[in-house]
Image (tube, rainbow, N blue to C red; front, side, top):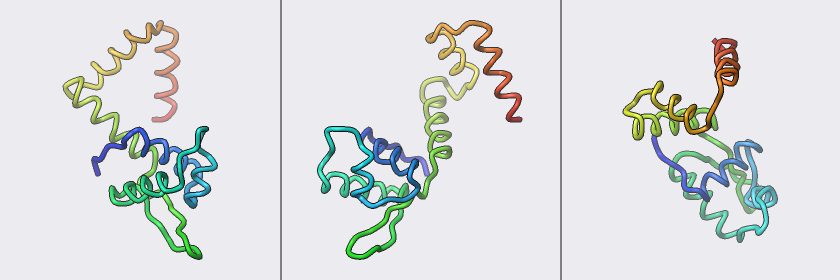
Length: 120
């Protein structure tokens, strides 16, 4: 799967990634003010379902929606798309760009490297 989320879809997915599963009403409760209309959220969730991000199961007269694509997988796909689209597929170039743009110092870089090495 290599589909991107719109801003509105990503906002809904952030809620679903936190809750794992929820009704439209429960998603709306977790969204910031001003709350979108029920029909708006319902439509976005159905779009997410058609894109393969979300599934559903019936519950009474409605549905409970659950994530199919986890946040880590989506984040990884998005980073690869960014890297391939803007940095010619070079992870080194991408990291170098972020280091320069965020004016990171050597201590911050060393801290990041320690974290990366812990996870290996």
